[in-house]
Length: 422
Image (cartoon, rainbow, N blue to C red):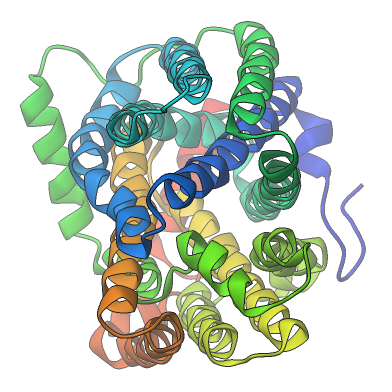
C-alpha cells in the first residue's frame, strides 16, 4: 500500500520485518527518552528555580556529543551495528535507573542530574549512527523518502506521548516514578532489539579508526550540499530551540495543563506534517524544501516566544514543528539516497552531531539570554534570528539550493549500489 496522494506511505514497514522491529523498538526507546528529558528539566527547575541552571544542561552535553557522535559513526561502519544498538540501549537503562534512585533520596543531588545527562547523551551519540545505518540497510532505495516520513511519525508521536505523560506524571507523582516507568520501557525495547539479526561490518578493520574517521570527514567536505543540510539544522536549533524554557513560559498562563500542552505543540505540528507528507513524493529539489521549511521553524518559534495567548503560543509551536518535520523528511531522504552504504555510519555520526548539537547549544543560549534579559525576548529574538539565518543559506550554499534527486550523480551511484546488493 503506497498511501494516498497526501497520506503516509507504509510500504517500508510492510516490506521488511527487520525494519518493523527496529521501528517499534525505536518508538519505545524515544518514548522513554522524551519522558526522561522533560522530567530532568522539571526536577532541575524544582531544585534550583533558575532558567540558567536548566539551560546549562545543554552546555554539559557538548563534549559527549562531539566526541562520541563522531566515534559512534566510525564504530557503526566497523562493527556489528545491532550489537552497538543493544549495548547502548542497556547503558540508557542503567543511567535512568540511577536517576530513579537519586530522585528517591530526601535531597536529590543536582550534580548527578548533569552527570547522568552526560552519560545519556554519550550513549545516545554512540548508538545513533548505527541506527541510521541500519534504517538505510533495511529499506529499499526507492522507499527512503517514505521511511523518512515514517521516522518522523515515530519520533513525533513519541514526542507527544512522552512529554505529555511525563509532564502530567511528574507533577502528579514526582520524578522518581517517571524514571521507574522509563526503566520498564527500556526493558521492552531491549527485547525487540535482541530479535534483530546481526549485521556484518561495512568497512575493513585493517585501516586505523583515526584513518576511518578522517576518510569520513573528507567525504563530507567533498559534498557541500550535505554540509548545507547540516548547517541549516545547526543554525535553526542553536538560535531557536525552546524546549527547556517551556516550564518558564507555562508560568504566563493560569491553566494547570499549560505545560503539557506546550510540550505537545512541536511534536503535534511535526506529526500533522508527517501524516500528510504524501505530497513530498512529487518534490525533487530537496535543498530548497529544507531551507524553506527551516525558515518556517524560526517564524513559528518567534510567534511562540512573543504571544501572551496560550492558543497562539501553541499555534506557533505547531507551525515550527511542522516546518522542522518537513525539513527532516527531505534531509533524511537526501542522506539515505545519496550516501554510500559503506560510509553511512560515519556520515550518521556527523548528522547526529548537527541535529543534536544545535538543540544542546540552543538550550544554553536560550537560558543564558533569558537570565540576562527575559524569557520573551530570548525566544522571540531566537526565532527571528533563526528564520533570517536559514533563509540566507540559499545564497551562501548554492549547491544545496540546486540539489535535484532526479539528476544528482551521488543519488544515481547509490541507487546502482543498492540495486546490485539486492
